[in-house]
Length: 317
Ligand SMILES: *[C@@H]1O[C@H](CO)[C@@H](O)[C@H](O)[C@H]1NC(C)=O
Ligand SMILES: *[C@@H]1O[C@H](CO)[C@@H](O)[C@H](O)[C@H]1NC(C)=O
Ligand SMILES: *[C@@H]1O[C@H](CO)[C@@H](O)[C@H](O)[C@H]1NC(C)=O
Ligand SMILES: *[C@@H]1O[C@H](CO)[C@@H](O)[C@H](O)[C@H]1NC(C)=O
Ligand SMILES: *[C@@H]1O[C@H](CO)[C@@H](O)[C@H](O)[C@H]1NC(C)=O
Ligand SMILES: *[C@@H]1O[C@H](CO)[C@@H](O)[C@H](O)[C@H]1NC(C)=O
Ligand SMILES: *[C@@H]1O[C@H](CO)[C@@H](O)[C@H](O)[C@H]1NC(C)=O
Image: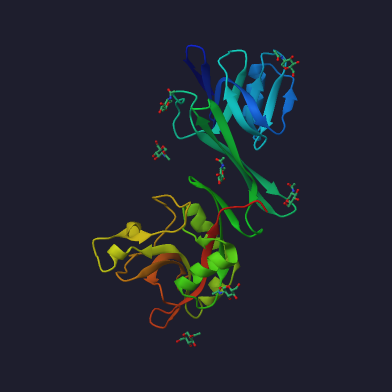
């Protein structure tokens, strides 16, 4: 751990970057305005800071000038903090560390954090996130929490993407077109066809496929599931478009340059109105391919559309 100090005329700000906890703690002067509950700890300020860094539920700590007590606010328990121009009242916010190893220039930053949990009863991972934003007109930091959110059932995978948490699952369905798949992701799941953000997500989809009927179908023909990705209109019949950039996506949490679309060799190779699919090849290897969006039972390529990959943001359940 290392720290750096930025001095203002009245306000001071310390940034602690804890490498192991991958969090940044911003210390400044202010006091809680709107909150539901807190715990009182009999710690001095430095001990309170250290405690917060190691408590994954800690979002904010506050000290009113006392040498022996501080208040700890867990994620979701506090909504706003007012800036105070007094070094007596100290407040610290914990943020997920961004990519940089340097401290922010000042305390008017925005950011957030989250904690992952596991609900044994429901056998599901949970995500509890928060965001912090500074309102310069009212000299307030506002905190907004997601509440404890989960995916819809135990087998559904959760992935924490740069744009936020995402749930995905591979549904089975016989002979379905891409359009039917899109409409069922929204009707059955309030979701969309999911993209594949990372190689880890690709691996997770592979595991769901192995647990389903996908591999057993391969005896007779190759099988595939629709995933997010439709060739851009300007790329239909346009050989200058290549790779993933030829496709447009509706998955709202997919990054602009996802790394999880692990192509079959020499793919994508379409030039018509093509859509992306997750495919199980005749040798039982897996890869991404592009095929006609209207295809569901092509005798030529011997591909059966056996399902679709839906995704949605986790919800409070
Ligand atoms: C600070 O908080 C402690 C514990 O709640 C309280 O006993 C003390 O009077 C407060 N001090 C000030 C200056 O408000
Ligand atoms: C994080 O840092 C690495 C290495 O410096 C860089 O390649 C990557 O693009 C950065 N990611 C983000 C989200 O800034
Ligand atoms: C705080 O820093 C950000 C960039 O890090 C800058 O845009 C903003 O103007 C700064 N605010 C103040 C009050 O200095
Ligand atoms: C698991 O989720 C259920 C339903 O939301 C909830 O009632 C229960 O308290 C949760 N259990 C734990 C340990 O959080
Ligand atoms: C809080 O976040 C939710 C999304 O998580 C958003 O819909 C809502 O507008 C936010 N509220 C405020 C006050 O920013
Ligand atoms: C779409 O959803 C409906 C209603 O749940 C279901 O009856 C139908 O089999 C689904 N179709 C596909 C292709 O999954
Ligand atoms: C799909 O194609 C195969 C091979 O041509 C055929 O035997 C089968 O009846 C077709 N299924 C449907 C539902 O069209």
